[in-house]
Each structure stands twice: as structure tokens, then as C-alpha cells.
Image (tube, rainbow, N blue to C red; front, side, top):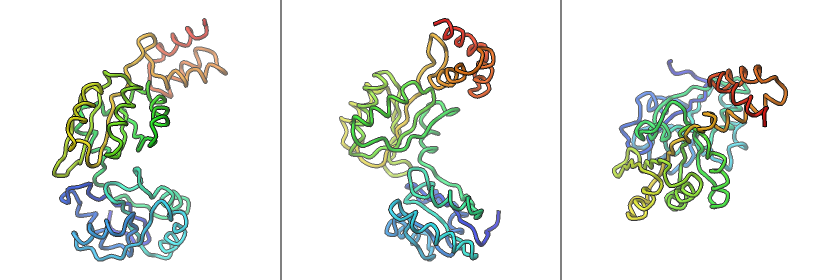
Length: 282
């Protein structure tokens, strides 16, 4: 797709290695009228590196709602604006959701310029299942709230992905151990695409002392990936599938509830039917 005036461009930028910047992203940043950035100082370094002289405007979590209308009005008058974050793909644990949401509501053209995402980059090399995964962003900073959040994910069978800050990485992993147990497989991807890139996986029991023993492994930007829960032996169903089936059984006969649950979850109808019968007998 060629460059279009009067559009909002969502532009992915490198998460470390400048060689990962696409030519299309570079050209788009040169062609737009203004670039909405999370941090003008950090993005200024990026733009200077690629010899982009397009003006910047700060759009961050504290002003996004206030500035959104003026940005969209400029686009509706024919200008084009690019949105970038400090690194990676915008909106993923970064500002931009409100702006994009309102652009869609106002029928403003929103154009993706794909590139690097730390989530997908980490998942591609972790050696964990990739067919189903969930991204949870940053966990709460306090241990009690963090464990409460993790408890809700304990039975999730999907690969679970988090971001974490270096000063909380050990405490976060210990909370994972408390909730998920010693044997749950975890992979930490640190400083992806940068000089000291590290991707290391093990059980939580073994990985935590490995991180604690090396101060360098507590530095940088982290993506933490946890193997999903094993299917429950007694039913073969994950917690979310059971929850859906329980809701349907409140208003539907067993056979109909099992069929609808199978359509929603993609699981086999017979397994859902058998479990529904067990529930009815209790």
C-alpha cells in the first residue's frame, strides 16, 4: 500500500538493534507531517539516527486523551500523523489505544507499519507452545496483588507472556513459583536484539537461583514466558472451558450446552458432554 495523506500510521520501531528498522517504516516517518512520540528525547535519538527531520509531538499516558481530538482533527483536514512508542510496536503496554480507538470511531484511516514486537520476538525463540498464548503486560508492583493476578492464570493452558522491570524480576519469579509451583517451565528473554541478549529457560525452581547468582541477569528489559497449565486429568478441560460450560448449563440442556461449548472453545463435544453429565450428577 502506497503512502496516503490524511491517515494515522502506527509504526513499529526497533527494540534494540537499529538494523531491524524497516525501509517502509523509515520512509513513512519521513513522509508524515508530524510524529506522535512517547518520549521526545528518546525518539529524537532514533529519528536522528535515521536522518528523519519530521517534527515530533509528545503523546503519552498523561496527555493522550487531552490531545487526541486535536490530532484527529489535523488528520481529518488532510495531514498524516505517525505514532511510535519508545521501542517496538505501539499500544502493546504503551500509549496509543485511546487515539486508535477514537480514530476508528471517527472513520479516520489507520494504517499499520509492522515491525518488531518484543512479545512475538521472545515467543519465537522461547521453545514454548506458540499455537495459543496470552499477553498480560506488566503485573502489579506489589507482591500480594501480583499473586492474586497470577492465581487467576494458574489453570490457563496457554503460554503466558509478561513484561517485567529489572528491579522486580526476582520477586516476580518467586511469586510465580509460589502460585504455579517449582516445576512450571519458564523462559526469560532479556535485552532482546541488544548486545547482552539472553534467552534462558528452566523450571522456576532452577531458574530463580540462576538469575540470583548473576547480577547481570537482573539488568535490562525482560519478557517472561510461562508454559501453560497441563489439562486437568479428571476432565481434560482447562478452567476457562469449564467456566463456559457451567454458565451454559444454567439455561440449557446438557446436550445443547455441550454442543455450544464445543463451538465456542474448539474442544471435542463428547468430552464436554461427559463432563456436563458429571456436573449434573453432583
